[in-house]
Length: 167
View 1: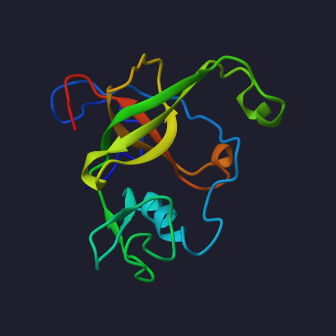
View 2 (view 1 turned 30 degrees about the vertical axis):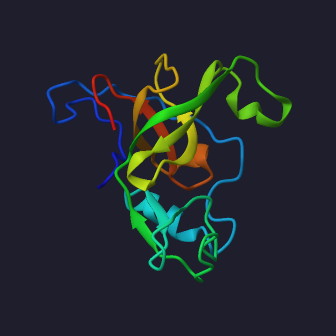
């Protein structure tokens, strides 16, 4: 269940050309902030979207946690999930905020909160790449922006609209 980690300009495998995306900066710190979320970031490095899945009760867990919020099992394991989902909600930013000058010249940009069906609709946030209009329910696929100076040296999760595909 790998996630594309490059800017393919060729084909998506279904005959449709995959657009090339311009890398986007990160305004917030990225990378593991503690040992609990480190496996998620390591998964992105390896081209996988990993989410915790409790082996005891089967609950999917996001945000990363050292304990299952349902059965209280410690250290829930991480599992690769299908990197497709639907836009749950979104917002478009048209002005650069003082704390995010990295986005100067890159507005407007759209941030989406995406439900992942293969993880019991846990929701993950990321910037929508490309000049793509979205709405609630729009199908999207993860794109992992490679690590660079723009991303604080860590790969980051982005979303791209997928025409004609439903999760």
